[in-house]
Every structure is written in C-alpha cells, then in structure tokens.
Length: 567
Image 1 (cartoon, rainbow, N blue to C red):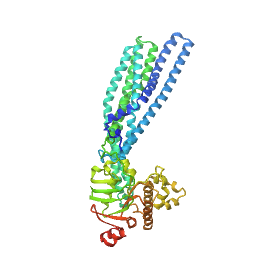
Image 2: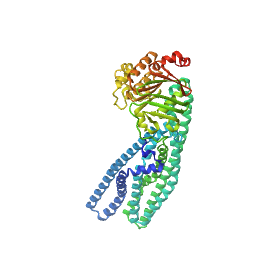
Image 3: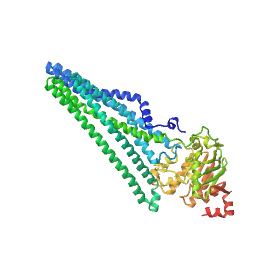
Image 4: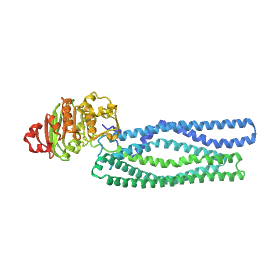
C-alpha cells in the first residue's frame, strides 16, 4: 500500500521544502562550519593588513611571533571547518538523495496512473537517479549560499572600517552581480528541465531496445530501431549543448563581473592610499580582500543556478510522486488457502469472463487467442486495477478492490511468461529473499537440475543481467523455479513451458501437479502436457469460457479444442 507521504501531491517547491525541513539539523551545523571557514578565509587578508600595520610600527620580534601564531590559527580554522563542514553536508546530501530514490522506486512498484504524463519506465529510472541526486543538492546549496554571504559581509564590514566607500562598493557590486545572474539563472532552469526530459526519453528508448533486442534481431528490425534511438539521442545531445552554452555564458558572466568588482575595490583602495586617506596596512588588507573575495563571490553567484537545477529536478520527481493511484488499496486480507473466482470480468478482449478455481484445485485454461490470456493475466496480477475493468475478482472470498496490493501478492503469485532474470546467481534468482523452504523441490520440479549440474558452482553459478548467458529454455525454467519456490497459496502460471522440449515439458507438468498438490494452481497454456496434468480444463474463446472438462475428454469430443492444442 502506498504511504500517505507518496499519495499526497508534491509539486517541485514542496519537495524542496521537505528536503530542507528534514535536514535542518545537518544544514545548521554545516552552515556554522562553512560560515566559520569563509570568515577565516576572509580574516586572512585582514590579518595580513594588521601585521603589516603593526610590524612596521613596533618593529619587534614579539609582534611578529604573535602575527605568525594568528595566521596559524586562521589556517587551521580554515582547514578543519571546511573538512568537517563538507563532511556533514555531503552526508546529508547523500542520505537525502537515497530517500528520494527509494520513494520514486516505491511509486514505480505501486499501481500508479498507467501514463504518468507520458513517462516510461526508463524515464522513471532517470528520475530516480539523476533527478533525485540533483534535488538533494539543495542541502548543500543553502549552507554554501549563507556561508558565502558571511564572507561578503565580513569583507564589507572590514573595508568599511578602513573607508566607508570601499564597503559600499562591495555591497552595491554584490547586489548588482546577483541581480544580473538571477535573471540568467531562469534560462538555465528551463533549459535544464528540457534537457533532463530528453535525456530521460533517450534512456527509456535504450531500455526498450535492450528488452526487445532478441526479437528485433529475429525479424531484422534492429537497424530501424537503432536509427530511432539515434534520433532521440541526437535531440538530447543538441539540448545538452544548448544547456552547456547557457551554463558557459552564466559562468563567464559571473567570473567577469566578480573580476570587475575585485579590480574596482583594488583600484579604489590604491587611489585612497595614494591620497593618504587609508594607511599602507589598510591598502594591503583591501587588495588582499579583493583577491580572496573572488571565491565566495564566485560561489555566491553560482548558487542561483544550482537552485534552479534542483527546482527543475524536483518538478520532474513530482510527476511520479504526485501520480494518483489507479485504485486506493483496501485494508482487508484474503483467507489462507482460499479459492480464486473471476465473475463477469470485461477487460480488453474478455467479455464477461466467469470461472472459479476451488481451494487446492489444479485448473488449466486453454486460450484460443493469446490476447485474451494476456488480458486475464493483467487482471489477476493487478496490473489492471479493479477500476479499469468491469466485473469482480475474488481471492479467498474477498474482492481484489478490498485488498491491499501487498496482501494480494503475498497470497497469489502471477508468473508471466516473460518474467525477468536478474544479474546475480541461480540461487538469488530463485530465492531473492533467501527464506524459501522449498528451494530444492522447486529446482527439481522445474527441471532446472540439469542446469545446476552443468556448472561447478551449482546454484551459485553467476547469471548475467537478463539471463544473457542462459538459453531461452533455461531462463524459462529458472523463472518457473522462482515461482514454485515462493510457495504461495494461489499460483498462476502463464505459458511456463513454451521454450522447453516435449520430454522435459511432460516431466515439468507432472512435477508441478505433484509439488502443488493441495494448493490452488491455475495454468494458462496450450501445452498438452500441462493441460493433461490439470484436474480440469477451461476453454477460453472470444473472451468467455466455452467448454469445461478434462483434457482427454475434450480431445475426444471437441474438434476445435483438438486442433488448438494437439501437437
């Protein structure tokens, strides 16, 4: 069930406020430490000016020793405050990015709106990684902005003590620089948001290509598909170049304006010293501050850009986090070991489909149209939520609409014919949680034993992503072993043996019937072996059940059935 936090609409600004609010402690500590760092950095040229002033007056070794000691304290403060301040902020940044990644991923695993403003799974992946990271950067941006402001204020105060005109020059110049850059940062935000959308679309396209690479090669469509990806990627590249130009113009303008302000402070201080209005020590301080203030001014002027990037990423995350659920899951749980009932379901090609699988029964459905089988699987797997179809599905006597998604999936496992194989080992693919009590039996029932025996590592044999180092039949048996090892009350299998040979298929059918004896099992298939192993067979034609009997009786008395399933 989705948490209240993920159900509540979250525009980008609200996401940023949430990130700031739950990291307020780390941000305060980071701001204090980074402010101390900037103050100490700014104090360095001030100390040099005072050293020059007093050393020239006193000309004593004691004054020189105190001066050297003061510089050592300042340098130590600079080093330690930066080290620990950035450690605090980066830890908070990394933790916050992790929280948003988990939250976006959780939404991706829940029944949210099927079309999230046109986003595909590959785009959601980009949002859960790059956009989550860039949103969390706001945790560092605010303390660095405040600490840079501290440096500017300290420098302005110190220069004002020497001559009020120098302090006013720093304040007026800083305000002017920020005003210009604030306007430019708006362009960065809009350009960056467009770039992120195009990069995400390119990621979604390549994810689709990887999934469909085998069939694309099969009918020679790979060149056209790659051409399509090249066009999407080129579009993303052009937008990235546009963003780079905007960022370059922003950085160049900021650097030029900062340099102009530093030069203006230095020249003004030189003119005042030439006229005898400030001392040599104050001139050294002013020139030093003009040089040192470049860093905080640069950091200060870059912050609006990073704020706009974080805002753009937060807005993209809001597309996923604000997506309304197709259905609000109920609080009920099905009765253990219950039956499965489909009552008058209309969805896609299904036309008032109605059947019941009693508790402990092994039933097979022979679909004459593959699309009808896919539509039924979508309903049972809650990929199509109750509001999307007419009729009722009951599990253990409870309607699916009254059950939480977690309760449905704990009680009933729907294993699709194209189940994913993950990088890892045979063991981790069969038993991801490591808690299965029927793993050996599942391996044997799925006839995966010969795959295990082929390799010295056995179940610990390394499997590549998507099972690239396994054959089609091995991947299918691995998927079946995972479904059987889950040992759920209700198991739904969709074409579990299409890629295995007839002999192996016969053995698997018998093994499934034996292992699942007393457990509710529904197999959607046209395999004669599995149909023969079932207690009864339901014929699904044109979206409704048209016949019901044992496999052998149907073979003997139903010519259409015989033509559809006989091999």
